[in-house]
Image 1 (cartoon, one colour):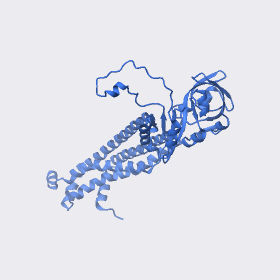
Image 2 (cartoon, helix red, strand yellow):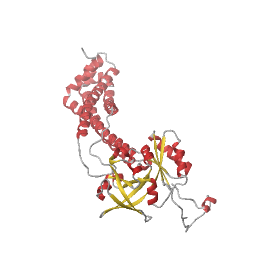
Image 3 (tube, helix red, strand yellow):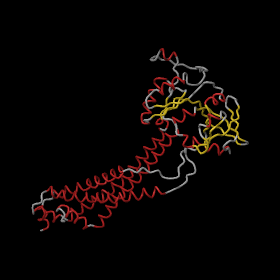
Image 4 (spheres, rainbow, N blue to C red):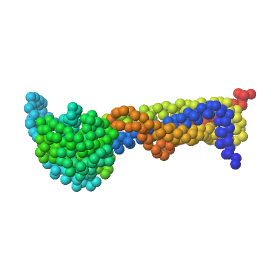
Length: 417
């Protein structure tokens, strides 16, 4: 089957400069391939980080803190006055969320929302000669299972075992390793209030997040209240939602209603998300630079063809080819390079993603423990990379194609004569 005349001419021109055409196609293909691989790697890690954090931590945490310090009466009475307050002695008051159980019940009545009370504080753990400082969280196991996925990270024991062993404690794997403690071992727990209790290890978990695994311990809420000498006090309300993207809006509403600081998981990890944005900007800049270099290669090919084929263009115009026909031929040349480069780039991208997915390594630490590249497989990456390459190639061909269409055949023939 014969090709359309415009396509046939375009293919003939590209074949006439095989080496330059091959270099330009490879430039486009490498740009598309690296775009697919880098996007899969970065989005995969970002998704892995978010899923890990969301599984381990609640979506919203209400604490017994206030986002802004309490305003002094003089400042409140004269908001626009030249008032300066110095030497204020802070009031001694019992820390904790006032009316905590009522707030928990009110939050639970919201659709798609679960809430659980908690008391967190520091504790000093001792096992033999080993001593470690840790953050001790008091929970209600039946409620905790509804707001975190910690149960699936248990290496031994279960959170439910805390209900049958009031003196039980669940340790992070890193903390247990540093203490040298295992299941059923008896530890000594000392709180800042000076209360000393003997506790038994009834569970060990590993989340993959070092801040949890290396420094967190969990006990029954009432036991922690006794150990911290804070009876009937909670200082955390932990919330989980069906729609995690709405956590920021709900946190703002809860903070406005109850005055206590409500921090969403997005706010808690805002610094990490800023790094993600920088990574994405670097990725797009790098791949964009590759595509710009490839586009200049396409521009160079078509400009050279226009210069070398000036007499042929004059003859074609004298045979009845319109400016639009000439313009279309050279645009097709750029489009062909872009399409072929995109197809080859898809193959390279798939190969790179497969290679990255097969690698295994051990960083030996870090905030989140990981032994592989977590990759995001999506047809969108291929579609965006292909569209970007075809667009860049077509735009690179536009200027020389426009110049070719405007050539005056009479001047070309006279110059040749």
